[in-house]
Length: 305
Image (cartoon, rainbow, N blue to C red):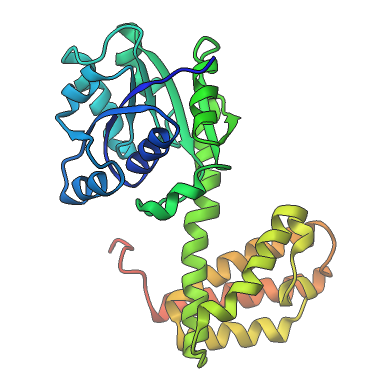
């Protein structure tokens, strides 16, 4: 059944403005948005021209589908405030885009008869028009009761996305997997670019792009079988040289190199690709390098005793 929704958005951040613009392109009526910061208001003006910017309670009262795209730690308070104010009504769809939260955070709205959906896009957003062609094909981690599943599926379909059903109990695990893969990837790639720049690369990103693209594609297709490099080969002396050079040139990067090296070693030892004697030598190098780094550059966050 084709339905045109009247959508209101509370939180015109990077995610909310883009999803609202995508729903608008699909023919839905974006009745109003709420955003307090200057950045949110500018984003709404760019992506949702002509849409009124109103108070959250007014947005909630004006729509049939309320899209809550506020930060995770604010979501519970926003739901409580809107429910207590009478802005949310029975039968209204209240949809949030938090990865960590499921339906529990919507309890105040559900208690008064609203219909809840957790619908998290597994994508990173810039909050600009660049994101709009990326939304189709995006996977949405969705948690909904059986009665709300048809509407959840239609919302994702209107966005051109794919539904991944996530149990309430697995919501945090689902989000941790995405954050570990995407957010930590940014840190890893940034550190790698800094090492290449220190080594004299004029364009570290261009140097890394084909390598990282191939590595990511292979990892997604083959898992651990895609692992290559000195640890997988058991090249003790190469690992030793890496550790010494990173400690001298980019000591802040050494702990992550050691942590990822140890994790990689664990995986290739388990499947038998590295001989135990070489694995033990590499692990000793990693432990010694980290201990030396901590002695030379103590973590300022470590509490004094």
